[in-house]
Image (cartoon, rainbow, N blue to C red; front, top):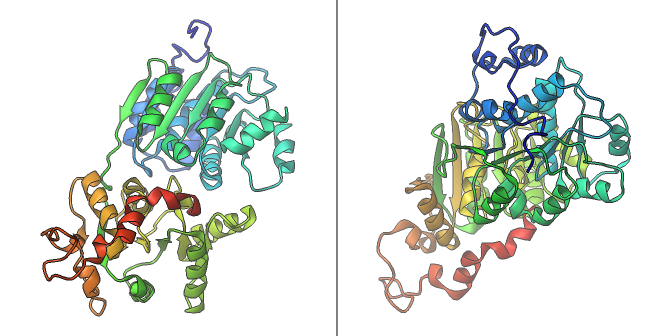
Length: 444
């Protein structure tokens, strides 16, 4: 890689108005960006921002590892906006490309760019599938500096010769591990083949599986690494699990939602069908609930998210499409109606509450079939999750008798200490719990 000709290498931020007014002033960002920061009431940079923004402003490649909800978007948005404003050049194609795994996250990233660039003239366009490309194509004709998109639609517009990337100076991969989980890696490689070799690369992720590590090694050149990720949930989240039988889950959910300790909740289910049905059932019971899952049109998904953000709805019943990156302020509770497919998803799901240093509550309904997931999750986060019994909803004997609630292993032959077969050890249950990935395609 030729670093001498790269306009983003060895760059230093300008020195305008060096007298600091708040924590962000130390970065010496363009005055219009600082005005936007003041208007957004950002006072002090979050740890991931403090660790990565200086290196990104210098034009270095960056790898940032941090939990969701820690401020990663501003960590790459501010350096990109600063570069666009301080190196005004005539351009026919985008100068920065940000790739995100879901439409909701891409929309949220674009909104934050507009917030932080409120007093600038930088143009941001969002590109994703599930809707007509007509308006997106028209927006591209205005020659925006910044593109935020999902890999599928970005690649589609490239192949139609509608979107050119030969002037991109910065590539951002946000939630890189989730994009790999969703099968976007082949599309990402095709997109990168269309980019200039001489560019800045910023990669942000909550976890670093070997496949993403391999990709990082391929695209990052001597990166500045900020590793703040922690597999354990944030300290601001009080999380627990309740042992319950599958047939009593809905009763338990109604009991929890009829309490007065919550004001805004996200309820996670494993399947799209269950999310739709559960939202309808809660609405019939008088709750202001809305469902969000992959079978909805983009308009329906946008209305659901907007309604939840504006408190038209105070319960969002969703699949894992909102488990990553989505930032809704003041979500007091997360309820895992179904346990997630993987241990890693547990931290991401409950991370929808307890954000921006606010306190949050998370509760997970666990059945006897979830023992393998529970042990793997507790091993990942480094300790046991607190158990709680809800009066009147004590777990059925077949749930309480599982290894999830006892310290002694069953005797050889798959029988419990009492001599009866343990349902947690039945072949069908082990087959399901040991291979959660076989159901993953149904969860988006």
